[in-house]
Length: 91
Image (cartoon, rainbow, N blue to C red; front, side, top):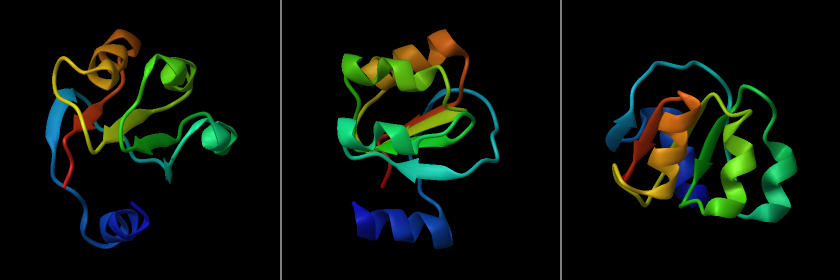
């Protein structure tokens, strides 16, 4: 994941948009609950995937990007509920 995160800094990533919008903000890769405190209000949440335990992070994130997921995944559904952009299935 760290190698992929570096790639994103230099060339972006492609994925499936599952909740519309445009955001310009710092992005942080969150690997698990031990990293939750790294995400500051307005940051873009980047993760492999999310579960219901991650839901509180969506309230402060400006967008969500995950490697795994689609239109019916947890990340997509919660992002739409919070009205924030989401991109899933990144590569």
